Length: 173
Ligand SMILES: [Fe+2]
Ligand SMILES: [Fe+2]
Image (cartoon, rainbow, N blue to C red; front, top):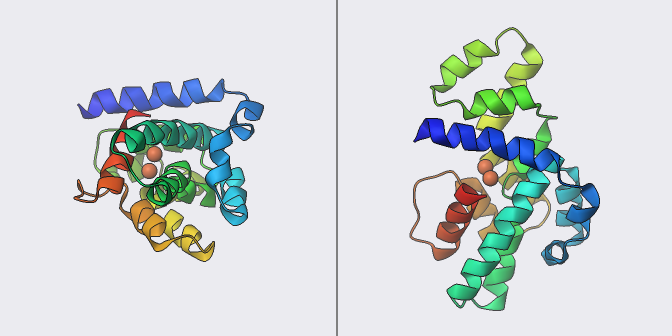
């Protein structure tokens, strides 16, 4: 299962490289972001922007199926678009992303990238991106629910329906 996830993650990175930047910026879903959040979205790498948009599109469908009220839907879409914004703290390269996705313990990943301090730092950012993203969104004045969902998006399965939808869509995108 972990090997399958890793292979899917690598395919995802390669697919995202083929998406044109204009197609990302023209997407109407970006209108759900505040101006400060939109700046954060623009600071993300293209692969993370494409992944955020794909996650938000899936969340939009599930939100409609669950009949979520418009305010809760807006918070969910903001979270989906920006859930991986913590990765923007460093210019994370493909090598660190691939190693981060390997189905092995964190200490072995760190050993793999120990030849380069820069790669090691990128790996640390990837490991901590949920909390780093939550901190960025708090500083940007985001709703507390958005901050909490970003912090917990790789946490255990939740009772909160918004976080459940986010985790499901993140997994599939
Ligand atoms: Fe994430
Ligand atoms: Fe994600």
